[in-house]
Image (cartoon, rainbow, N blue to C red; front, side, top):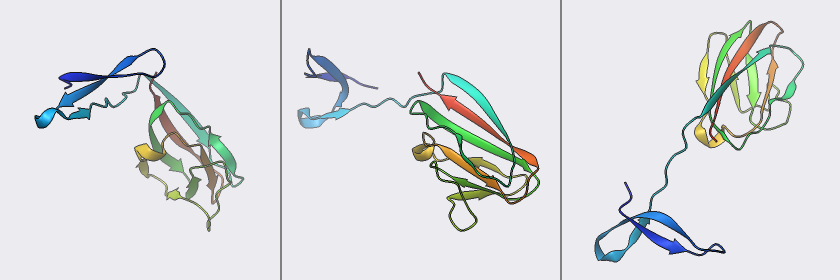
Length: 127
């Protein structure tokens, strides 16, 4: 909880919330963004890459995935088509995955080893 603020001048002047510590120093208070909207993306698994299946979104704060696929699905967190040799993560049938917060704003590309089933992705954004 901030107990002080420090003036900054990004043009017209503003303040930044801080916590004042002994000796008069200030530590900036940063509030983590929480989701204000949730959507679902359902991809029918294909052996042809979908690059990207999910577009980049700077306002995205969380991504969870569930594999209801018939086989392994390779993922890349960019707009490059994943392969068995060049991927960032993979999901086996029945897997659940929470994408690390540091990567959830990135696009997501997917390819299945075999067609069939779905990948259900829940996307949370903050406004």
